[in-house]
Image (cartoon, rainbow, N blue to C red; front, side, top):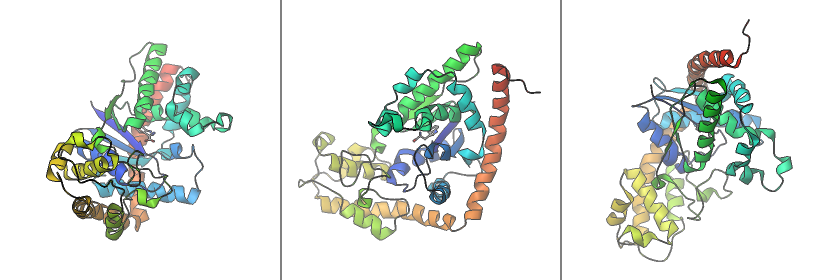
Length: 332
Ligand code: TRP
C-alpha cells in the first residue's frame, strides 16, 4: 500500500513557487497514490499569526489545492488542527526524540536566529510534529521541497526509534520524493533568493491570486542582465535571473530546461518575457479565477475540509489506538 502525505502552511501569499514546486507535483501523484494533503495550521502557529488571517489563509490554501487540480473526491484534504491525533502522536514521538537530533535542524537554527532562548518550544518541536503528521497515516511517500529533506530524514529516524524501542515493525520509514531543481522558483528581484511568501517586495513573486495585468507586469519588470539569452544551458552559469525565468518557462510548458533554452537561444529578454508573460497569464489566470470563485463560497470550502477531517480522523484514530496499545496506555 502506497500512501502519500504532504502539507503546506496557511501563512498567506501562495505563489508560483508553491504551485510549481509542490502542488503541481501533487496533482500528478494523485492518480497513482492514495493521497492526503493537509493544511498545517498547527505548524503555522510556531510563528505568531493573526487569528482572523489564519482562518482566511486556511481556506485560501484549500481553494488553491482544488483550483490547481487536486480532486477532493478521491484525495483527503483537511486542516491539521481538526484531527487531534497529530498533537497526541507528536507527544509520544517527542518522548523518543533525543535533543541532539533536534539540535541539528538547520531550519530551527535559521528561524530561531541568535536569540535562541526566546524561540518557542513549538518551533523546536516542529519536526517532531511533522513526523507525527506523516506517521499518523503510516504514509510511505512524502513529496517535499529540498528545504524539508532534513525534516523528513528525522521523521524516518523517529519511526525507526519507535520500532526499535517497542521491538515491532510498526511504522514504515517514509520515502522522500524530492522534486528537481527545475521546480525551484527564485525571486523575480534576485535570482539567488528563493521566491518567498515573506519577501517584503510583492514584485518578487507571482501570487496565485494575482490578476492577468499584475502577472504580466511582474514578469516584464523581473530583474535580468544585459545580455541576450544563451545558446545552451552552460551559458546560464552565473546568470541566475535568466536561469530562473527560463526554468519557470520550462516548468509551465512541461519542457526540459534544455528545450526552453534552445527555443529562445540568442533572443532578447524582451521577446522572451513577452512569451513568458502570455504563458503565465494563461496558466495562472485560470487557477487564480478558480481560487477567487471558491473563496467567495467559504461554506463550500469548509464542507470539503469537514469531509476530509472525518476521513483523516477515522484513519489516524485507528492507528493511534494501536500505538497506545503498543506503548502500554491503558484504554479502560
Ligand atoms: N514543514 C513543511 C513545510 O514548511 C510543511 C509540513 C508539515 C509537511 N507537515 C508535513 C510537509 C508533513 C510534508 C509532510 O513545507
